[in-house]
Length: 233
Image (cartoon, rainbow, N blue to C red):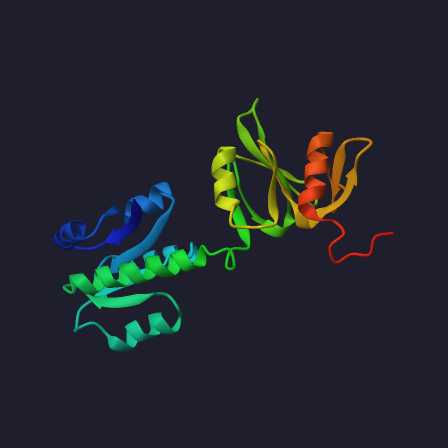
């Protein structure tokens, strides 16, 4: 269910709950506990410190719908648009316009999930968050001992995700350069530099290596078509 941060009249909240299938969280609670996956903030211009709350969402890339009335300063509201602080401004009694604006934001968010728009991933571990460019990932594998999914990148750094391998695989299946080499291993074919049959390993850009069975090496050579658009010596 989609999560919405709100700072509005309780009656309006109840109406929106009837109109939509959404979860609403008070903005004060979000700011205190850093609730994740909030997709939109709806803030009434009458609320205390509303500009600080708008900035809070702006810093996290969350679009904001500002609720106002005809008596509120048009010049002030215009400045919020000009500075890209708010996505929309709607009169607080126009319930269906609020619903329409939310649907528009959700649709744009889904468009951004298209692989042509996504360039990075965010790893949420217990003790850190890491932003990694997809093109830097050389391979991803699952450790049955730690029960975590490991992500190795070109510079040698290694990160762990609490997500299961199947979930990670599903999220990356739209990116054609990730190949499932074994049951718990994905590799980035664009970064593959050497296949070593004798030592049963493959080497990536940056010198990182991964040991694989001879059968998987043969499989890899077949699906990559190494001679395509290359001169073989």
